[in-house]
Image (cartoon, rainbow, N blue to C red; front, side):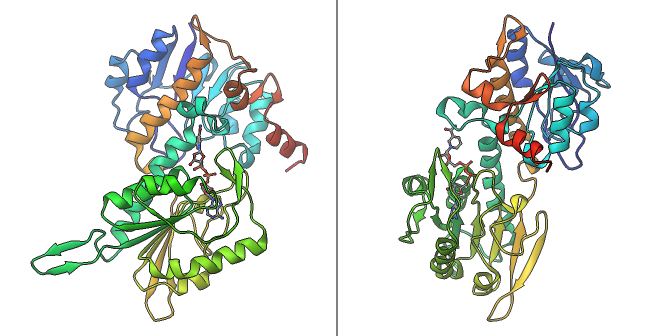
Length: 381
Ligand code: NAD
């Protein structure tokens, strides 16, 4: 019987787990066996007993040589890959462009690796889309991080002691994370405005309760839900036009990204200095270079503003991992959808001609199948 194995994550501060009890019956129903390392669900609040009750075998240590399919959250360490048997399958986020040593190890060990972070953004692939599911969690978390730092309340409040105005939140980048940030800030009672370079987001922003900031600039829509890199002139003009909107908000959330590129720089130090003291900035793109000048992933920096006082700038890091219960639920379901797509009669039989299966396959039989990653390796970078 094919053994699906989940080991405890080894990256410090990674609290998610690649399987939850709800999906175990799906694997078992497809004729697969599930093995989970004891303690793997500790931070996601899944006890060993819950895994066992759902039908998994719980083991103290994972024997790499006996793994048929390894499910993981973080990109695998090359040392772990080298212990797997050739022909084994791995399924989990690979972030290949920044993990070339791991990609080489997967290739050289003849592992068939599936990276759901490479999934094509087509409607049929939505259930497999880990970037979306984890961005959804991050968008929510970003707003909460801002709310606890803001020295004011979010909602308009009429009390016996007087009326408090609603806080103003500006969201830049209205993809999955940005839209969830808008919805969350709105639920907390803030007045929310947002901007994105793709015209399709105008209605999406409005549908979650935000006002779209129209800068009267040409679109930078690359199709398929993605933006393209802007010309320097357009980037400068965008900054110029956004400056008064940034200056006016109490909370700025940035969540802009361009696939395969460092995060676009949307907010300069000069723009930050024009904000009101006490304002809070949370950059959800901090780990991919940051939308805000001077942001540092996982850190909070203070920027002095013109009139005196400071703005706090937080570079959000590991946001989904900070909410491991629900992030794991979504992630585990994404992986199950992908793996079950390739399971027939208890065997894993990937059809590489399928757009989703082929698109997520990073390495197979000693070959790096993902074109951009193969090109990076050829370039020796
Ligand atoms: P992303 O992380 O690549 O980018 C986030 C947002 O930043 C995008 O909306 C983008 O337009 C915006 N952006 C880029 N440069 C900008 C700039 N200079 N200024 C302002 N905004 C900028 O995208 P994402 O969140 O992963 O997905 C974007 C969209 O793709 C989603 O909203 C959805 O419509 C679509 N999508 C479809 C599927 C699917 O059908 N399977 C899955 C996921 C996403």
